[in-house]
Length: 124
Image (cartoon, rainbow, N blue to C red; front, side, top):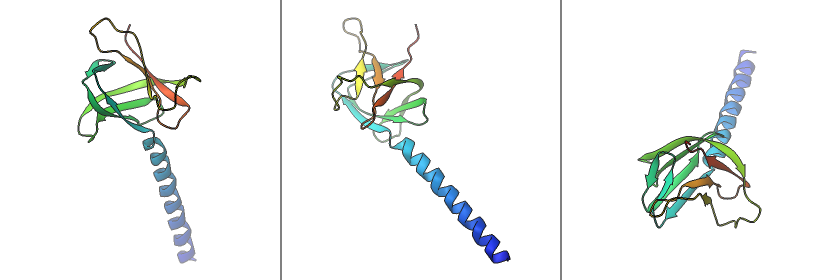
């Protein structure tokens, strides 16, 4: 009887770990490596020309880091936004307006392969 109970508990623990691992993988799959040829801005930060990883770490939070994940440039709460119907599938960001000679702000990021994206919230 004790062996059967131990087996059932062990199976439950393994199932729980599989569910947690699958959930973690689902969020980590919303990651895109983006390369910019000129500076761009995000709330509170300007990114120089180069490659950056955009990663959804929770349904609301986006993290932007270097491609090695050794430096975080932004961790921000964002809003859900639908991908515009006419937006090409190979386009992953939309930009807002900026004064001349200023880095254009990224308005929204659309993870590769998803029909929804995350809109960045800028201070007024």
